[in-house]
Image 1: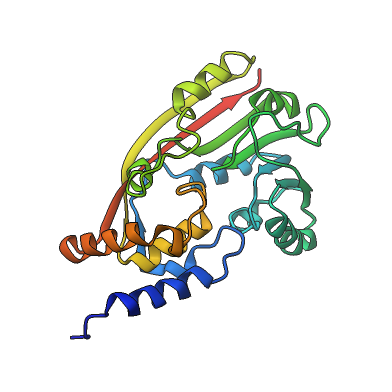
Image 2 (image 1 turned 180 degrees about the vertical axis):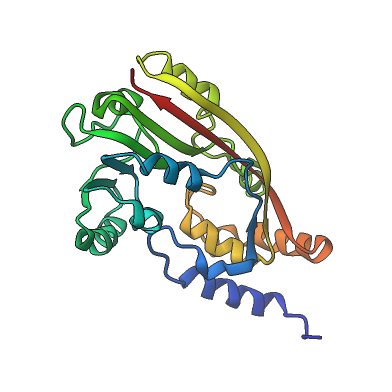
Length: 256
C-alpha cells in the first residue's frame, strides 16, 4: 500500500497538474482518471453516416482538428472547418491544411456570422460548439443537414456548485434550441436530451480539467480555490471518487 500524501504534498501534485499543457481538445492526459458515461446515441456514428453521402462538409469549432480527423477516410473533396481560439486555430491548420481542409478563423457564438457564401455546404457538423442557427440555415444547401451534439448549459452544475459558482450558459437548453429553430425554416429530424454521470478519480484530474474548461469555474486556480479543493479531497477520501452530473443533447435538422 502506498503511503498517504500530506496536504502539502497533494497541493504540490495539483500544481503540477495545473501546469500541464493542454492543446486542442485532447484529454488523453487524464486517461482513466476521468470517466464519462456515454449517451444512448453515437454522435460519431451519425456523423459517419451523414458524411458518407455529403459533398461539401463544414465542421464548426473544430478545436485542434482531432475529432474531424477521425472521419478522414470519408472526407469528400470539399471540407472546411472553423475555430476561434488562436492556439487551436494554429494547431488545426497544421493538422488539416495538408489534407486540403480549409480552416477559417471564426468564433463559435449564437450571433457569429459565418465566413462562407450562401448554400455552401450540404452537411454542417458541430460537436459542443455554439452556433447561430440562422447562419446555419443560410450556408446549408437545400436538402442539407445540420447535425450537432451539444452540452446543456446546466452540465456539471453540481461541480460548479461545489465551488459556490454557476456556469454562464444555464439558459442554453434543448428548449432554447427549439425556440431558435422555430425562427428558421429548418425542419427538425431529431431532438434528444440525456443525463448521466462523469467521474474524477482524483482531485489532480479535476484540476487539469478545470484549467482546460475554464467556464466550469470561472477564474479557476489552485491558489484561489484551495479551500474548495481540500474539501473535495476530504470527500474523495470518504467516497473514493468525485461524481457529477453531465447533460448532453443531440439535434439533427434539415433545410427544405
